[in-house]
Image (tube, rainbow, N blue to C red):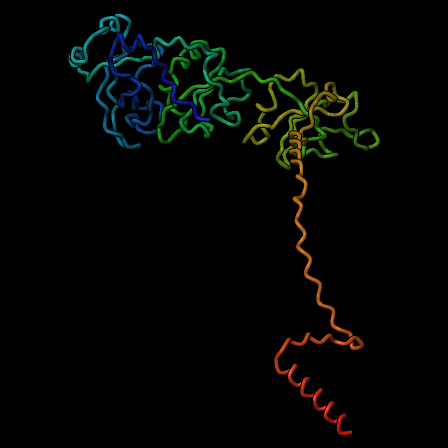
Length: 365
């Protein structure tokens, strides 16, 4: 995670002077000739800040010079005139016009102040280096045992950090007040300046069980042959009780005798080819603290499955109405009922005629 550029602001100091911030003026970056270079001595191929912010309240500054090209024959940039306490006192509550007039009388362009000079920030209030980098910088091994912190380049993912020895109390006090911004990034062809500062936190190793590390091998890791040529592993008395392990296959582990006697944490111990650090420390079976150590291969417990919501009872579906029963066909043995005869009509007349004919025939006989 990137942290905002470290420029400490002191409100009272800024109001009292009312001048420009020196760190924001382009000519603060000073190009100068490296007299120890094997190249021509007037090659301006080095940079630094004009005045360390922790030591000077302000300065009379120069105009920004034309950007130089590496290898071009140039003289040093014009230096600033860094203020002492007496000059700083004379600049309080001065107008911009008066400040510029004072600078012009000295052959300079204007006046500025370093807000960081009055900063009350303490070393333990500086952001930890883990805010800038997801792993320890290679240059700063063995870590917090030797170094208080580091100056951080703008590209924090690079390994060109400037390590700050913890015993150099003057340097530590200076970088807390933004002096890192006056240091050039080491071996940087672009001649960049450091962008921030961070502190190393003291680490408390939490070893894991060696036989739970994914790259652990049953043979060949911190073992020794017996007098019969058999391999003896992790038995007491035994020279190796712990190891610095790597999660990369094929990387040899760094075996350790007594973990409590080691002063450099595994996460600050270089691999053989010094391209990175070990991932952590582990304990072998039968070593003190082994039973209390965590499993390295075990991941975080899986979250419990969410409880199934209650299943609502099924909604009753109404039965479809029964279809009407089909009409039963008439049986052949059953006579089909004749429809009732209509009253009146031609059927009645024929019946009367038939009766009369029967009477006539009967009378003739």
